Image (cartoon, rainbow over all chains, first blue to last red; front, side, top):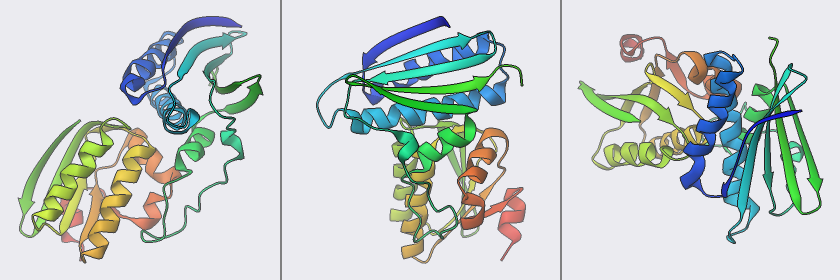
Amino acid sequence: MEVLSTIRVPAKLDHLHALIGMVSNCAKEQGLGEKRINEIEVAAEEALVNIFHYAYQGQGGDVEISCKVERGRTFIIEIIDAGMPFDPLAVSEPDTTLDVAERQVGGIGVFLIKKLMDEVTYRRDGNKNILALAVDLRT
Amino acid sequence: MEITTRQEKSTTVVMVQGRIDAVTAPEFENYLSSLIAKGDRRFIVNLGALEYISSAGLRSILATAKRLKAEQGDIRFSGLQGPVEEVFKISGFYSIFKIFDSDASALNDV
């Protein structure tokens, strides 16, 4: 696995644009198209914003994001925080058939990540949450 | 993100350009709230020049729609394309909102 780029910053919304910009540049360098890059940006934003809001429960903490390439075939965005255990894949899917009055947007972020990425994996390693968003480079 | 508005009889057409993400969504929602506060009730939001939307943007739209519903208002969308159209589709927003190809068709539909 080749690491292309890594940044670690405080898990705050102020850093969103810098983090997304890094991911976007890596994706561009891998030759991904504009549409796929936009989808990657959305998925990465959703994962990061969840961490900004919930991981540290009001305490400060860092988030680290890395872009990697596996066997030249898969582009991976790995997002690591040391906040409370949170497996986004365990979040139940939102009911996308409800009308405006009943509709909640909670859960849509994770739903978008799952729909837009080719593969999403989560693991808890020691005190860390490690979320990997994978995109096939061959399509 | 850049927002411009124009009036078409009793309808306010809101054009939003650029990106609605977790950073800019509150600004977008506040802008629409201020229009509702000054009495606007019928909206067409033209997303033709919007390049990017995340769930934070969807949340701001939903909050605005709920506020308008409580005031017997109406919100329609026009010009969706590319990634914005895709995010709307995945999220089921096509089934809860009135979505049109153009401002003209949104205005003419009763």
